Length: 445
Image (cartoon, rainbow, N blue to C red):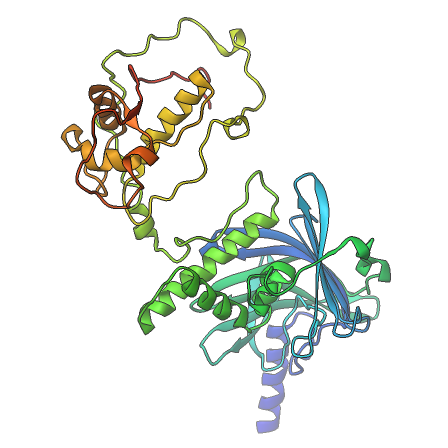
């Protein structure tokens, strides 16, 4: 009787866990070579990055392309004594090749997109993107839950394993949705880097002074497959030293998690080859609340009601105005280099000086750097409060009533805090007669 009950239970379990009666007692094994395409999703960093990968363990080679081939990375274990990383990426108007060689202690290995299934346990079924899939799970010592969703597909007389999603969830959260998978081995030409002689070799200093930084540059997807976080830990130590950051144990953990997500956002954005690039500064480990505190620029109810308001533009429309397809004042010399307001809510003063600097250039074709500090120190009677916020129109009115605003070198450097007003006669460098709103002609802009 007990034997019958056992057999009935076994049959029922097999029917529940696999429509094709697959024996799931054996841990699935990925093929030694495959091609996969998918999207990397990192909710905390607001990243959705498409990728395509080719992997062949027998050839000792892998290649991962990001953003539809905008950036191509190669991990070639048989290239050179300890292997070589290659990267092809757009730089200005051309495609540049960079490389870095492996070392005795850091050999280059082919990068799998799929995790090692050792230690995973079957956890039943789940529906992923409308497909009933097996759910395999592993919990690490850090309580991170690693989950693989897969299903078995019949191919001729055999059954092939097809990954649907690989997810990590805990303090961190990210996952890869696989849209295409084939167990066909990539051809050798996939791993060939054209004209290797033109590839610039990057040493440890160029990679940021830390060997593990090569993950960010040459093998970024490793962070989302392997559990090794050495590159994040080393980058965090390097960052704290560079910007003189010191935290207690609990705060250090919180700040490092913020830093990790920001670094992901920076490197992913730069791989997308947009019209701009991002870099690392002292704000990378700031919380959202701290960043909001730096944007204390507000508008009063009478904003842009200048002493002498601008005349309204007549009946002109876009049809009667010749508008260029694009216009970048940075390329025409009208914008000063990037300035840093520091840990101070003084954005209103930088907005004010930037507006005047641009207008002065348009009129005179001379670019000057005006003083934000003088507005911080001297315009309190016009509604401004230094690091605690202020108004652009208050700054403009102060400039008009004061007879102008001095250059930064005349008044003194920006301090990131309010100081006593030491504006003297003869300091004023740029005057304005009025200010107001330039009405936009495009209602949908």
